Length: 77
Image 1 (cartoon, rainbow, N blue to C red):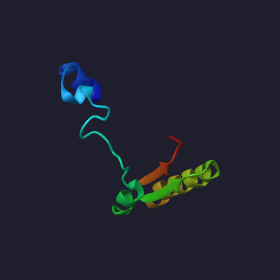
Image 2 (cartoon, rainbow, N blue to C red):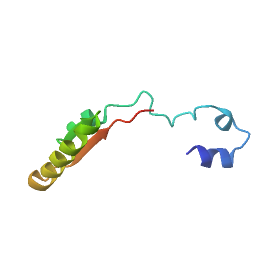
Image 3 (cartoon, one colour):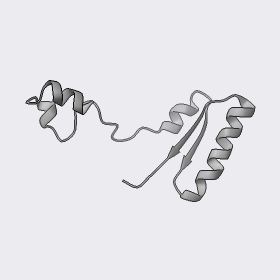
């Protein structure tokens, strides 16, 4: 988004801004809560050892229950 706006309006306020208006997800929404509202399987992964069990559970939910699956994997900034 930033590149297309800056290319079109290189002298515009959005191109000069450190944060492009209306394109930030800060603070980040709770993606798991949003997906869970649609009955999707969700798993929030904060530590590396949580990843494999979360992937296995998501695959199981998708294959056996026909549910959508979301794994929210948090990484260091």
